Length: 268
Image (spheres, helix red, strand yellow):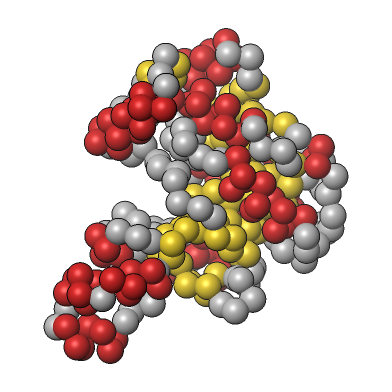
């Protein structure tokens, strides 16, 4: 199947994979934020993208589908046994035109910037050879560097990902040797933290590559780091990285929810 090519914007389709179950915050997508369910804020932000021609939610839970459709958005039911959101997206996209570009928007990102979506889509539209694109932002909080829940990415001179890791990469050897530890180096050299990039879970795929990716077994690196984008690198696919402005925040825990709620209430 031909995986590269140029696409009209009408074939740029955003799919939001949405499960009700959540290990750290049960039913988080339906929690109220500023008078509406969390997932509806994500939908509203994604719908403001100028490059997305269609947006839908792929879910296995009727409660989520009812809330989405009740607000006038599109929802489709998918299997309940998918191991990842990417697998759920692949099922939803399986009947789309072969020249479709699929945007994977995380459901728990109610503050996602529509401009970020546009920039990642533009990266793919600008080069017919790109099969997958995503984004990152500069890390400004030193604690994020050592936090394994914050995924770091190293980027080459052409703007493609070299590696993703939960560990601090690139490792500042000389600064650590000077100060005795990474934490001390980060605390004593203000600009050191700015050399790290935080990966954000927004992906854009050409449909052909998405289907091939979803049909490929997990790689050893992926199982080790529990980062599925490493499978794409192991497959030999270049992942184009776009740097975006800081601001988005995923809701994984009650503390995240409270923080996002405070931001939204302050903006009213």
